Length: 457
Image (cartoon, rainbow, N blue to C red; front, side):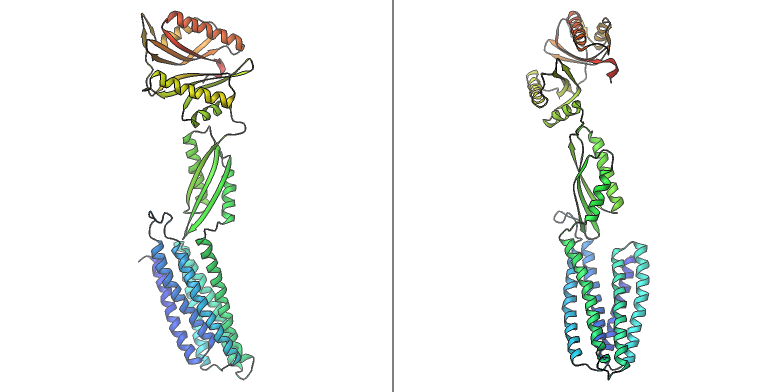
């Protein structure tokens, strides 16, 4: 048996002892307020037993039929307890009103006062050790138990005053009714506490969200790097655990790894605010108002299941021109790959109002190797040698070779002098292509992506 259970059982034993003592005293004295106090302690016993059973059930792990666990059993037990308290204390109030109308003197008054004083002393000691235990074990259950017995101390004090006033002058028509008034006061105090407890239980069962918690979560997440916006934030309590579901918007150009890192940091931030919370983060990739056009092209390709790289966008005589590399399975034949590329071209033309989309098809996961063409060999080294014969070409890189039947397709990035005009760059690229075809006569498609030297990556 762990420490928390020992403290809980010790508290239950004290409660049972007080019930017997106060019931015995109420029978001897005939005090209705003493009876109300005894009933209060009896309710504590029933509450503790019901709570103990509920806690044992709530500790069962989540399963397929109860993915959020069994914690709400505690809320159901609280409603059962509230119903019991109302049934008992409404009866006590009715008897107190009858006693108020036809008052009766209290017998064994000194015994009643002694029993009440004994109960207050015991509860003071119990509240002290339960409070220490709650802090030591960070137990909400023990903390609630301590709060409950603080209420008992207050109700016992009311009964003490009521019995004392009844004994001061039993012949006084006012003081003799103090016992009945005390019983009603204790009953109302307990019922107010029961209403608050019942409201908390109903709120939990109906998944009422703490606006303070969700608003705080929203403020904290909005201030994190990489987060554009926070959508829905939902929080629900199941027993002692809080489940938080939220959605956040991030730039759609962000890598999967980066978005996963943001989700992890969000989970930790929420747990810092709500310890032991179970957090679920949904990432929504969205376009930013200042999103670069190249990122928008990549995102458009991804929406139709295509992966592209080496994307470049140009304006030629006022018309938009897109060049890119498209990754396709190396098992496709040329016609199938061409159909995939054509579908991508049409998609990009519609979305970005392009004059032309040049797609270089690149087999995914296949090494780029040299291919023999007649007596010449098309190699990266050979292509680089040809490029060195052109004065305005600074460097060629990202060279991709792809066999297509008896021909070979070439795609590459070509760095040109940055001060060249677009027309000059176009002429230089055409001259370079003619040189390639002259030295490598069996070339098929040649895709040259021209870029200023300072923009190379």
